[in-house]
Image (cartoon, rainbow, N blue to C red; front, side, top):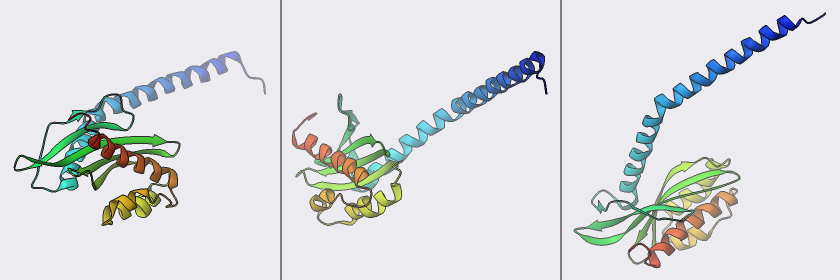
Length: 176
């Protein structure tokens, strides 16, 4: 079968137009959902703050942590105007995905509760079941944060690093 140049031109033109239309559809979908996604992310963060220290606390305005790969910002937490700790927004990624946490650190620098904002690790379920849930339920958070052998060790290591970076930042008095 002999292929004519005219036929090849039509097929190529049709595919180019189809690609352009699909690109416009994807761009339009992004424009329509961008604001909703950003709003939902902020709402999830605000709801997560309440889970770290409880409902009967007040939070300061967020303070950004410049030039830090892991820590994005933190809120000072108070009860009756007395500081009881901080909540840090943290995020890190590795070859397996991204994890974002809200990390609570008590005023005595002991580790507090965490809330998972994002977990796109390829072993996300293993990481949550065998590390993050165990950390959350543990009475001895210092020991739990160091127990990184969970079947999703790389994810547990970045979570450990985020939690310890939050505590070390607070302990060092940075941003105070």
